[in-house]
Image (cartoon, rainbow, N blue to C red; front, side, top):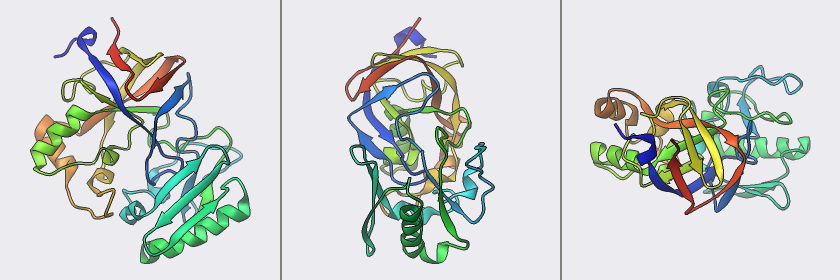
Length: 260
């Protein structure tokens, strides 16, 4: 077992997902703040039929009530990017062109839902609607504010399945390189880490689901990654959720270290 103080790596990539279930967006840097996720990470979601989400009293709701890769793999066809300067979402899909919308505007959000319905086609079985609430994030786990993944763990899975695996399958926020494979899931809850100039605390391992089976480029369900993970490790965990204890900034190339 790797000792916490022996963990010496660096941040290989940073990702956010402005629209839950859709394309991760690569970042060069990000701010980490206690009690928060990355700025604009999973701020909006698209409900597939009435989800029960109440913007006036937002609570955690299962991802299966929304457009996401597990219930609707074809969502991987859509590429999304948020323009921080304008607050507008850029979305594109092959054969459907690009749409640029302000999802805080109900009319614009409805226009996006109509466009997305056409893109997803027969996979849509109920009306789509963009939902949001100030301060609410659509995380898979209600306390999973920031997720950390490990490139060596992904490489071990690649060897197990005999095929390359894109890191976007793991839908993490902070991607680490230089740690041993699966060292992250062996860390006890409460373990402290320094990420850039921020200090984080391990919350819990991330249990993987069939969303990882979806190819982020083709939208095909092409690799049974969860059974492969269970065979390789004896569990379905890959990556960890962390909570931020001390605010700081992180940049690609910054250190990612265990603290004693």
